[in-house]
Length: 449
Ligand code: SAM
Ligand code: SF4
Ligand code: F3S
Image (cartoon, rainbow, N blue to C red; front, top):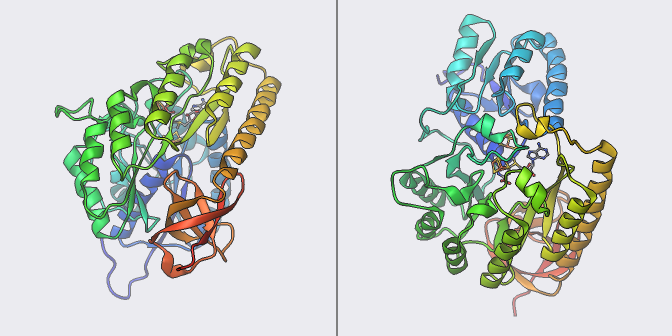
C-alpha cells in the first residue's frame, strides 16, 4: 500500500548478521519495504519497523541477536508502536521460535528463510491483529521471482543462482535452516544480470552455498560452467565472481571454463576446513587432503596468478595434535591469499554436536591463535609481492577506513586504497601498487604520459 500525499511516511531499519546470502536477503527485504511505502531510517531509533536478519552458523551470532533483542525491548517500551521483526536462519530453528514466543513477547513478527517474500503481508497482519505473528515455513515451495530488490552497492551486485545446501557437513546448521538445493532457472538469472547491466552494474557475484552443484536439480541439461558461459555473453558486463565453491564438485570442465572466460575473475573461495583426512572424513566433506592439493595444483596451472581464499576450522571433535599439524602444513603449502578461521562450535541438531570426543576450549584457542598468526604472515607476504605491479582495478567508492581515499578492487578480490576522485567511481582503471597491509593494498593512479 503506497502512502497518500501528506501522509506520514514510515521508516525501516534492517540489521543483518551472517553471510552474503543474508546480506542479499536484506536487499530483498529493503526492496519489499520500500515497495510498501517505507523509507530508510537513519538509525534504529528513527525507525517504525526494525528487521533483524539473523544467522545461526555459530553461537556467537545467536548471542548477538539475543543481546540486541534485549536492547530493542527497552526501545519498544519508549515507542510501543514500533514493529520488531525477526527473520533469517536463526528464526528458522523451531526452538528459537519457541524461545521468542516465551521470552521476547514484544517481538511482533518471526519469519523464516523460506517465506521472506511474505513479510509485507505479515506486517499487515500485525497491524490489524495487534498480536505476535510467527510464520515459519518448513521448506521453500517455489522460488519467488520478480521481487523488487534494493541494492546496497552501486557498482557490484549479488545474484542468487541457487538456494539451500545438500551437503550436510556434520558441523553445519545451514542445510537445516536453508533447506535442500534449489537452482534458479537460467533465464531468470540471465534476465536479472541483464537488467543489472542496464542499470549500470559492472560486476556480479553469483551466490550459492555450493555454486558448483548449480543445475543438478533442474530438468534442463545445464551446469555451473554452462551458466558462466551464458552470463559471460552479456554485453557490457565486466566482471563475474562466484561463491562458494565446494572442492568436491570442482570439475575439470569448470577449471577449463573459468580459465578461458575473460570476464570471470581470478579469485576462488575454496573452503578446505581441515588438512587431515581423518577430520575431513568425520566432517563429511567428500574429499581428501590429496584431492584438495591436486585440485589447487590444477587451478594454479590453469590460472597463473589466481588468488585462493579459504575457510578453516580448528577444534572439530577428535582433532589431535597430528590432525592440526596436517592443517598447518596444508596452509603453508597452498599459501592462501587470505582465510576465514573458525573455532568449531556445537550446533544443536548437527551430528558433530553430539560427538563424544570434543576438544577442550584452551586447545581450540591455542590452535586458532597459531593458525591466525601463520595465515597473517602468508597474507602479508603475498600482498607484498603485489608492490610495483600495475593491476586493473574497479573503483567502488570512498574507502571505508579513510574517507580521504578511494577504494577499488583487483580481479583477485583485493582492496586497493588510493588517492582519487569521486567521479572515478565505476571506472575500470590501472593502479600501480605502492604499499600493502594485511587486508588491503595501497595504490596510485598512473599519471597520463
Ligand atoms: N558453503 C560453504 C562451504 O561449503 O564451505 C560455507 C558456508 S558456512 C556459512 C561458512 C563457514 O562457517 C564454513 O565454511 C565453516 O568453516 C564455518 N562453520 C560452519 N559451521 C560451523 C560450526 N559449527 N562451527 C564453526 N564454524 C562453522
Ligand atoms: Fe554447510 Fe557444508 Fe553446506 Fe557449506 S557445504 S553450507 S559448510 S553443509
Ligand atoms: Fe549464512 Fe549464517 Fe545462514 S552464515 S546461510 S546467515 S546460518
